[in-house]
Length: 359
Ligand SMILES: Nc1nc2c(ncn2[C@@H]2O[C@H](COP(=O)(O)OP(=O)(O)OP(=O)(O)O)[C@@H](O)[C@H]2O)c(=O)[nH]1
Ligand SMILES: [Mg+2]
Image (tube, rainbow, N blue to C red; front, side):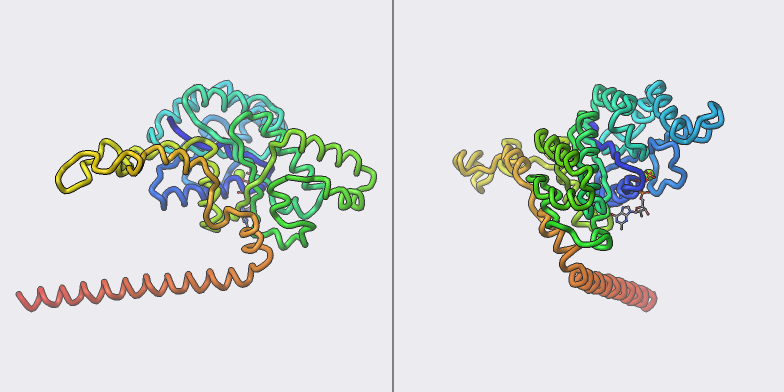
């Protein structure tokens, strides 16, 4: 049962960079991962690519063969992929069976909001056993302008309704948010999407002509009650780890222990706990229980960057202090690594000298 993500979002929202970041994170964590490039215009792929749509078709091929412009050719390529889904399935079958699979989509938003091909490809993969979540990246600078924020809400809702997958919307590049001006509200207002009526003043002053339309759209978003956002700064390990936990929960991956994980202590497979060798030395109510996995995994996600207020503090309110603290941490870690390397070299040299003396 392979788990994975369909990474979608507007051009430049950070999809390929995120795929690269996730590849690095999973590699460091020892989780097998494979990235599938489904963007035929992706010429400089930053990550190690396990499957590349360019082996099937490229944007240039489609433009040359059919006299299409770049947007039409992009739609042609994705329709061609759908028509040749056997090729994709064959390539995916060659990946390691426990690999987590990321699909890097092109930036054309219609592919994830109205065009049918991606949706049908995803359905076919789901039937083949993939447990996928849609990860929809939106550049965080949109929240600095009320009208643009409404457009992002609409886009996110449309993608959720269209793809019909477990869905995680993400405000990407949150580390840059302060560059685009002050926020009218705290970050959690934008991520939690609880009461959009507060936007009325900003919408009315920015574009009075469309204020009523914008507020009607806000009402629609609130009626659905589906849209919310996580945040992402791709170079921040805590941010990536938090998003990983959210997505693992959305796909259900969190409920499935890795194949190599030992049985939790206290499960019946364990050896007896007491020295006399009596099985079930503890009464059942005191025995740790494997099903605790479900209650803890289904609970709220805790840890650094889990609360939007922490994200606001890190990137907006106290960015300089946090940057200085991180630099000091890195310097300390660097010194520790250098000291360990020097000690190892010294030990090696002394060992070699002892061997020479013995000879
Ligand atoms: N500061 C910052 N920059 C980022 C982050 N994520 C992506 N970027 C930058 O945003 C730019 C666009 O990133 P890409 O990963 O190419 O975006 P994309 O969504 O794949 O773009 P298309 O494939 O063209 O749709 C690059 O210059 C990245 O370095 C982030 O979290 N923080
Ligand atoms: Mg890309």
